[in-house]
Length: 402
Image (cartoon, rainbow, N blue to C red):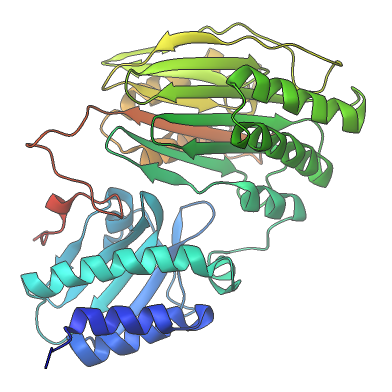
């Protein structure tokens, strides 16, 4: 008779659970099979500044200055005696942290199994979001505006990891964003990235951006070139608004094998590159925003990205923000901050840029949306490099940190 392992039993229980009861079912199984006495799933809020509990409404923790926040920010498994903190991450998309406790320390075998169960949990949570609103609601410190609700549902995720690249994005003000958006599509041989800014305010801007992004997706799924994706989205926006409203976008296509990048710059997003210690803006040929005129033709231009390069794509709400007559770009802080992010992973690099942006604005309310995307282009993995698990967490990091 075959004995079913505790790992398989816990995984089966989680997979069989209703979407709304996913966490409770997993916790019950961990109590039975791993001796866990206390557990909490902490989900990052929309700003990624705090970790929000699913089970205990009073257990919110800041990302900065806490062990759970460190596990989330660094994507590391952290053990402290009888407690273990596990990043909940699906293919690089950071969801939160699973915190577990039991009377005796976690042995290496249990840790490895819990890492794999947490990966399974992350993927299940992504699927559960299509069925239940429980986990989306748990992320919220405040109510989203209707425009922000539209924008967050439009996103592909907030980060993705492959051996060739790491990619992350963030919108601000997170609970009241209007027209800014980022999008990506990770394919076998290429990566498409866009940052888009719809003209106008509130729901009007969100719907305009949604039209443009979905038009670009529709063209992309049909196999259209980058220039044709822009052209077909331009036609869709013009047909709906006859030139009265328009959309700024930057479209990029990365060839995974060669690092050759094709670009269509149709508006205001800025592209910055950090190569070694040098930060520079990449000059692109400015073309007309989508929907401004009828039957606009778009052209692609190309440049090369090298292993070790970091790219930032910044909407005008970031680089053109003003305080006391100077823009964030003109004041000089933008380049300094980008340079200082070298040792941070992309998600945390974005938090650093937006944090400094808030300091520049003296923490005044946003007068425009901010979208930031950060891409690290990596070398192909070698035998000496850690392999990446399904979560996008390096296997080498799944050892206790004492």
